[in-house]
Structures are given as C-alpha cells and as structure tokens.
Amino acid sequence: MPGERFSLLYAQPGNLVPDSARARRRIGALLGEAVAVLNHGAGLAAYLTRNLGVPVPGNGEYPSHWHQFIRDCDTADFIDAVTIVYRYLFWHLNESAANWWRDAARQIFDEENLGYDIDDVGGIHPKIDREFQRNLTSAIAGFEAERYRRIRELLTMSSTNLCADPPNYKQSWRAILSAIEVLFGLMFPYCKLTSSDIDCRLEPVVERAYGDDPAARDAALGMLIAFRAWLDVSQIYRHQPGVADTPQPPADLAVLSIGSGVTLLRWLAGFDAAREP
Image (cartoon, rainbow, N blue to C red; front, side):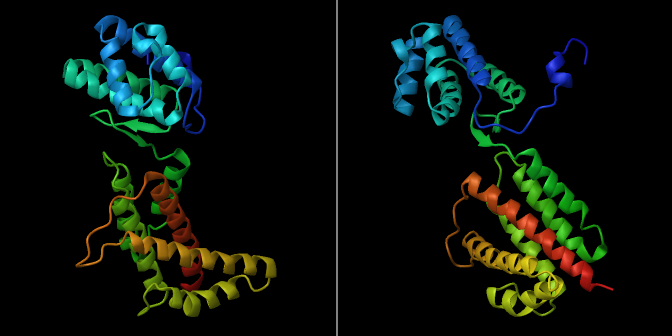
C-alpha cells in the first residue's frame, strides 16, 4: 500500500499481548488530544472515576494528567477506560465523537498487537490468538472425508460463533462437544460419550496404540483422565431441556476449553483413522 509505514507492512507481529507500554503511550496521547480539543477533561475525569473507582490525576484538567493516568493504571482499568471514554463521548457529546475515539483506539490496538477486539459500541473482548485460530482451521481441514462431514460442519459452527460480534463462546463450546460426540459415535457405534464408555471403549484402544511404549501408554492414559474431566466441565454449559440456560462462560475459560476440545478431537481422529480400513 503506497505511503504505509514500513513496520506495518513488513515487520511481522509476534503473539498477541495483554498490555503494551507503546499502546498506553498512544492511547494516552489520543486521550490528551481529545481532552484538549473537546474541553471536557473535568467531566470525563468525574465520569471515569464514578464508573471505575479510580481517580484521575489533577481531575483530568490537562492532557498530561491523562498521560499519567493511562501510564500508571492497572491493565483492567486501562482496557475499561477505552470503553468508558466511548460511553462518555456518546452520551455527553455526540455519536460522531464517540466513533472517532473508537476507530482511533481500534487502530492502536491492532497496530500494537493487543489481544482484544473493540466492538461497534466500544465494548472490548479478548481476541482469539493466531495459534488457536490455526489449530481450529487445521482441524477443519483434517476432517475432509465424507465420513466426517457432520464433524466438519460442527467445527465450522464453532469457528463462526467465536468470530461473531460479540463472540458466542457458549455455542462455540457446545459445537466442539457435539463434534467429539459424533466422532466417538463413529468410532464406537451405539455408544454415547460418557465417562464409563471412555473407560470401557476408548481406554483399550489407547492401551493397544501405545502398548510398546510404557511411558507413552501411561501418559496417554493420564490424558484420558483429563478427557473425562473436560467432558464433565463441558456438560455444565450444555443446554438441558426444562432447565434455565447457563450464562455465557468467561472468555478465558471458554477459549481454554474450546482449544482443549479441538486438540482432543484431533487426537481421537488418529485412533479412528488407524481403525478404519
């Protein structure tokens, strides 16, 4: 792209980060600019303190006070402040000012590789990291055979829910659980995915697969313990007819569990491939 900064075109970003001194300096400068132009420092400082319970130095009278606040506050307060500023501008100035702030903050977050997305009304959500996305995409590609059509559909459904705005972590998690259940049913017809069937059906398969390597066998059997625990936890977020639905799981817990489910799914697929003629 003509005229673009070199670092944005050619410097490959590393892993997503939860915080960044560079991002804080840029957000602080942006906030200082907004305060200077809009002349709302004291009002914004009072609004932010009322919502976060954190004082702004000098009651936000000068841009330097906002630089100091953004530089020194906790990570959670730094992230929340972006949303609070959007709300203040929307309700006390106008939508145009709020959207200017949102778009400028989005650009900074993207360029500094912060692990968050900013939605259209200023809310901030964890961004699914690149390694997680590669793992999920690779899993979808690995289930191309017609035998796995339903599993592929469920993986795609999981990915779609993760990429929604806002992400639907509960439905994404449920889709991964369903995909594992489908694969388990293909491996062991007429069996349901339960802890007891993991013991009586899957455990002998695992023992045979690693029988010549005692250390690997013991490690794999230990993974079955983790599999059973994952299954129990996943049932918490499964919809039960006649029971009030559970709320959305926390983002960090959902991403951890969905990623673990994808890894388990790929592990089971290896056993299924070995059993298929």
